[in-house]
Image (cartoon, rainbow, N blue to C red; front, side, top):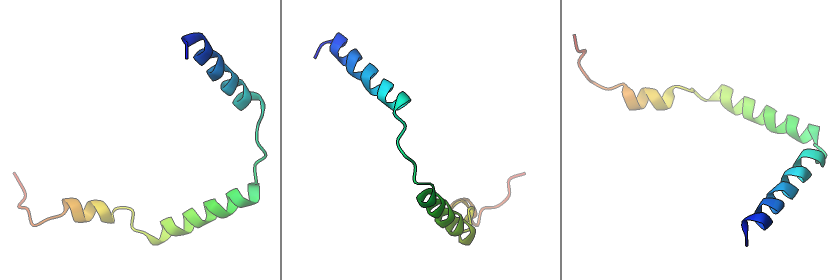
Length: 61
């Protein structure tokens, strides 16, 4: 496919994305965000780093 055709396809897709907004299911979005928020509150966000970087190393002066 030539560059002109490829550019025309990309332009067409970009135009469709810009002007044809899909309908958004706000209730589904709310459920997803609520599920993510509840998972985050249960987890320790620093646990991964604590186990990775906290060791039995001596302090360097």
